[in-house]
Length: 381
Image 1 (cartoon, helix red, strand yellow):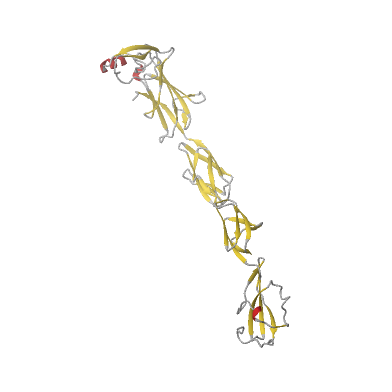
Image 2 (cartoon, one colour):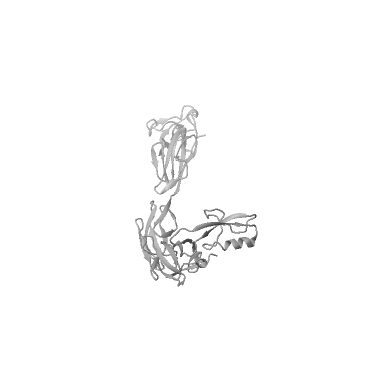
């Protein structure tokens, strides 16, 4: 039963390992059936209290009085009484602390079966946990503790008349950011504390190269506004007056700056009852605002007129409104009556005869391809 090769028997016994203190080389032992737990051919690695060991105690034996079939040499392989289980640590961009011990890499540990494991996870710098930050498990069998973290997203912010692409990058990854000026502006300089390299691309754009890091990206862009020449369209009816935001006069041929707002004013050269029918300012032929038309030197006079449901009667009444050509539904002249009413109605109009009209409005300069802005006055469409 115990012979393997007529000379050796391997016996697996349930005893705590004592490094051969109880079973020592050179002693004579008799092996009986009751002493034998299992038979192994070879050695086996064991773990006791988390420490691996691989050794055997061997003794010589003799036949007992019953002439049992024993061998010349018996290997006693020590087996710990404590049963161990395997705990796998699955870590991605994170560390985990299990019962006070921190682990930073994937791997496994062995613990006594039934051990309660209290663990906490922490993301590595530049990452955010996507799994539970802590937990508790009783290791009654092989188990796995998982801690996973994903890279943070860093914002890219631009100070100045420019935009960045992309507007966010992944933390702990190097990136190139392209900076482009807003229309009507030219970039003169770019600074960024997080940048490893900044360069002009020669086409008006700049590239900001940032190394892998965990800080939000702040880019400061210095620009100069593109300026345009302002031309006043020749007019035999109106005198133009333009002022900037500071109230300084802008003359014909002066420069205006993209993004700045200018006040336009046109004063009728000669007193008129019709005021040339002007209704709006135009820049390069496009209407830029609903201009306000008033009489110079005095407030406009508001009068009323009764208008029937007749379209012809309505058009006739409109001719009375020489200032702005409008009929209004109330004396404050805020709401225009644009078509003949359904019944006889009292409407109102502004009358200021034989005075110079004043047309006023403002315009914020936008980018223009030819660099010249022409200001004139046109009929309201």
